Image 1 (cartoon, rainbow, N blue to C red):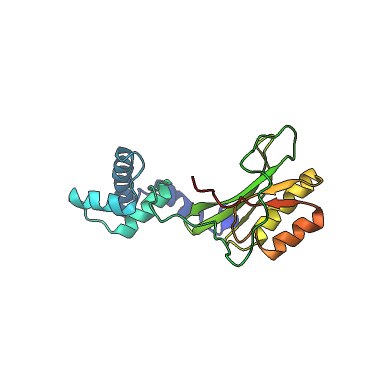
Image 2 (image 1 turned 120 degrees about the vertical axis):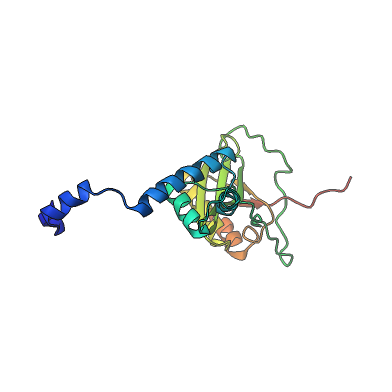
Length: 205
């Protein structure tokens, strides 16, 4: 092993018997305090709050060091970032007629499909997920993920559903987001015989 890694045997045995450095011992002790604070907060505190707790306790440590130790321990707080908006209606486009009228009970598969877009927060930003569900089984028959909200994400989810089910004249029900009212999505539905059905405007009482 030493020959393959280019390490001398004496260096390897010296490494095995060497005590952890002062920095490593301090990191281990600090990591235990960070874990304890994180547990007391029921897993809600992130690096800023934990850093403040340590400072109040008289522990002088940089915030970046706290972030590094939390990352190494797999700890994270609850994010309170503003939610991403996934439904952006294009007022220039007239939506298709509502073919479902809020009646989502189905007696057999592919009658109808229900589609939507949601988002998943990640450390690098939002990741968007488009899903097509069969209202009969509530099973996901098509899905796609993307870092943006272009119409391609709903096209990919639709194409996956078509590849799995190959239905005839299925109703594809969604909201009035610009992805579902786009020209590309409408042409694809027309090409494969899918009937798009975004909901109509809400009636006033």
